Image (tube, rainbow, N blue to C red):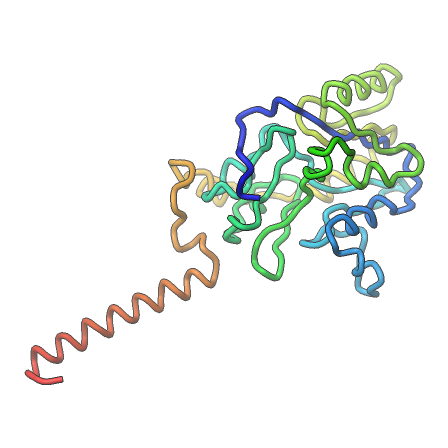
Length: 261
């Protein structure tokens, strides 16, 4: 995906409206998401938990006070995750989707640290994964796989202005919304307490000092990350190089002092 170009503001903006009250908890959206990403085989495993986001499960289904809530990347307008990525692996695309380019990700985890919705998850390859809004399908004029799979119309895909308009129309009817002018994943619901329980569960408390340190580097976008952000492999390589340099310096000193190898 490294051919994708980051944008300051998307011009071909799309989003998804999730009508919580229409959802029947069938889970077809979760399976469609996994099928599209080539991990549907996991659904047959006894260890598979559809209520949890993982590096291979990008859409989860949770329940609070008997009300179902889908959890996935919100694709925020102010995508801080993309702002803090030191190698521009995490970008906002022209379609509004926030995407992690796997061939650039170094596994530093900065995106996961700053995400207020607890979305990016680290895979076995140490790279971080999450929903990409089915960017390839959108580019072909198709809706995301989860939207296409919903049998009751609880998920609606379209231009973001149409999504916000539909959400505001529901607000006028007395229903609650979340995400208007903030994200590309918009909730419409009736039970405020259930939604607060959901949001309070998925939102992670942040260490203010750690976030401050993350935001202070890099000062220039695209700058090489320090060793502390390269993951364990990078640290091992750096230490190995340092050890090799020290060994060579000792050998040179020994030659000078002893006058022989």
